Image (tube, one colour):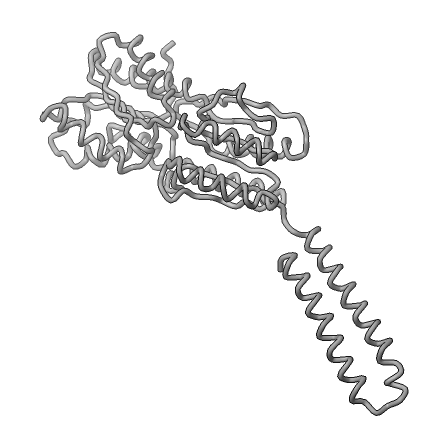
Length: 359
């Protein structure tokens, strides 16, 4: 029952009581009752009014606090799904309800702007919000304008926004993993595998998204320092979905040349795309899987099981712990809501699923 409904019930109850008692006073033949009816009417109407008022107060006091959670990609991504689940669990433990807002199209700036407009319209329903932002430079001004006008705590989490930390509005903070460090770790894992094979001039394909360019940028630059003769090709048309990895890998095989041995190494900037690449590899019988190195990012359960089996090209992945990110993020948001001190910008350190020492 919401506040408006409580008020309506109180008003309707008062009217019905007044009508019924008025009819009773007109139809009864008991003299003493006729004299007392107006007093009854007054007392019952007062009681109903008090009841409606108390119901209204109760609704205001007991109404759960709400936080919105705006995500930028579909929750079929296992890392994102785990992050969402843990954020909801941590906030509901604090008696705060989470309203999850999902895009109709993966990584869509228009969808994100549509949600901004809806949140602004119903801003009084929320005490704060969490956003997994899009790294989309064109909407920077609108994004900052939305946060400023919302004027309540907003935590940006996981993916860094398109604006720099010194542009953050007053009631805004960011926490996520260090994607540059993750790119460096992935390069070291790739180098480690080729070093064991005694190969120093591989053809390497990067399948990435424009959303977190730091991963592929640092991976490429660091790997070139480790393997000067490596030839690296980067495709940034992915959107972190399994079918992206499958589609792009097959496309790059056939576009570059007709020989299946064209890439000895593949780095995908998330595990979902890496699993799609592995699906494509398994469809090509003549592909020398024992001579191909696949490195992923996120360390989701399916990929770590494949890596530990040792029976596939999937050799390593950069681990980002969604539970840790959710815990740290919720603590930060609660500090912001309760006017406690908070850090505006923080990067957590990822690690490799299988430790590699290549310093």
